[in-house]
Image 1 (spheres, rainbow, N blue to C red):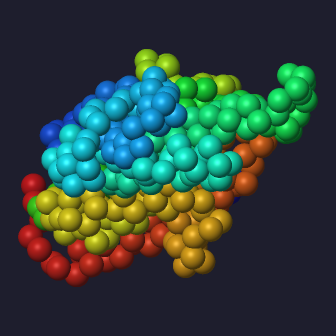
Image 2 (cartoon, rainbow, N blue to C red):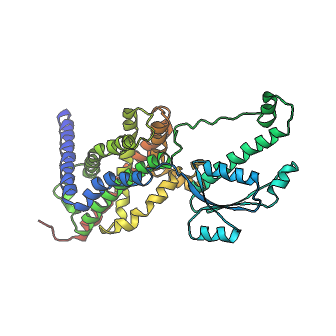
Image 3 (cartoon, helix red, strand yellow):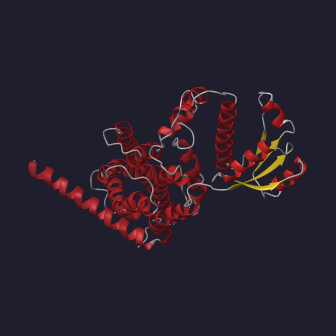
Length: 405
């Protein structure tokens, strides 16, 4: 009985290795699969990184309508123009002229200073200015908001200090700035958009390249009726569907080891993104992410009947998966239905864990929640992948098509 047990293990391992080798051949003979497995994860991170390589936006053009034309209004404009965030493009005679510049996309904001700006300040009253912003790009709005807030606060302190005649500098500081505040930017010192969004994109691109590659291979198998080549003459081997799923998974996993190192270590290093985590712990965290993505891709392949259909079914989900990860909107503030759906996607937990480890310096024990969730998804999608292939083999056998040589 012991010999029979070891013989079954040996037969099973040999069967898994047979599927592994066969899948390698299928991948390297399929140009589409090679594009998704190698070209896409190599090129897309570089493309996105170069697009956002400037990190932050400088000198966003602003149009000014100065109806006051006084020393204080000119001083305010000088300080705004001196800021690295904004640049005064033009001093317009009226609001309509400034609107024309915005309609032409020559500027992205309009600052209107009222005619009684100086008089109200002289009377000790508040003198609000009016700001209009193009909200199509929040990076521009952020620059305007920071600059206008800083300039108005600084000028307000100076104007208030002028009224405190006879006061010492310490007393003036106590009145004008009773609670001094200092800001320290954690984990993203440059405040750059690329350092914020690219790490999440890397994880989503990695998942999508796996799913797309598996999908195009599955579509080719179904379209050309070649699924039988994976089970033909193997019906007598026990657990042949289990071996089929494991063999394919080992093939895909081995192909993405180097790709994962390139995307999650080389790309952040090349573009100087924050890298505070231990790389070996990050690779350990990515192991269940790769496995769950592979089994997730095999599960989704049941919906793919042609090679081209992978573009219709899978490609559009990239933005959905990115939003569901919580990088653009807090995950715990999403509607419950989206939290449930997002929790079923490997990239949701992959993005959370990778950013916390790579950008914030967390250890693998600090991200045990996402790590455990990825292992749970690995188990769930492994079972569904076996069910999918069992169904596809049963359906293929019922076709009773002539065998291909």
